Length: 400
Image 1 (cartoon, helix red, strand yellow):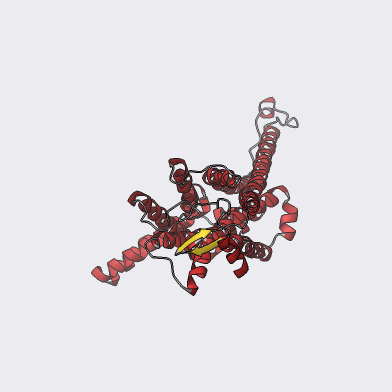
Image 2 (cartoon, rainbow, N blue to C red):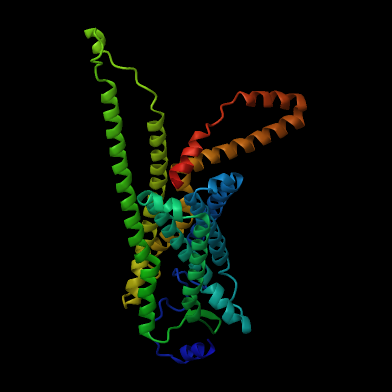
């Protein structure tokens, strides 16, 4: 490591680095005060990420049964990653006014903190986790028998650990090329060929390969679910027609045209319930995937073109828009869950109702005594209770 650092420092005629001196990986000035508007946007996005992902985690912790399906386990893991990313992003952005450390700690602080190595480890882990949940959904729907026999919680947790380890190891290259020079943390490449190699490799590993695999997974999922819906509709139509056929064994012609009473279709209703749960999960994850593509495509293409020798205006409007899009991906997933993910909606309402009930009982006890609290509890007994079959359908719909 030391030899590499000295070699890069001596190379005063080295080719352009991925980012100009004094700029971080998102193109924000490291050593001067950011514009107030940009700082406000950064703080707002980081705060929304903390609040949103923190709420998702609290909902899951309040009802541990939610993490039983593997898909929910991956979503819970995704929220943890995004929450940590939000905290680190806020800390890095609010640390802009502090000078770079000097002495023996300068190199370590540059490589681990000011290079944003930790943030990019989390970004890559987040992408890999999205890929894992996409593949898990695909195997569950397209190869249900294999999923039931071979895909377990233990293997899912091992895959999450591998995603973390791979991200930590791969992003080390960025920490290696980040060098503390004269109180500044700047990326220094040994050669232009190495810069282009890692630029292309990063584009493939962080974006293109996950994009292709997730596109294939969700296209297959949508196709399979639509096919099953058509088969189910055809089955119901044939069943209805057979039930409405005239009874030829009856002697009376009037009764011969009388339809038989429809028997309860509990099996069909159960299948429809499970299929609807699967469709809801698939739609939610498709929106998450589409959001990921929207937020990351501009900046990934921009980064690739720049590493291949193209020009890039780090202070331009287009680059700043791409930066904001990337940051929005940290806080947008909880909004998607709240709007589309029915199981999350149900448990969020239940948690909020429970909190309101506790506050109400505490208020009534402190002001009106235990008699009013007992009256309130008696009223709660007559309140409707959400049916359990919805959650059961959700579990079976995601784990098959």
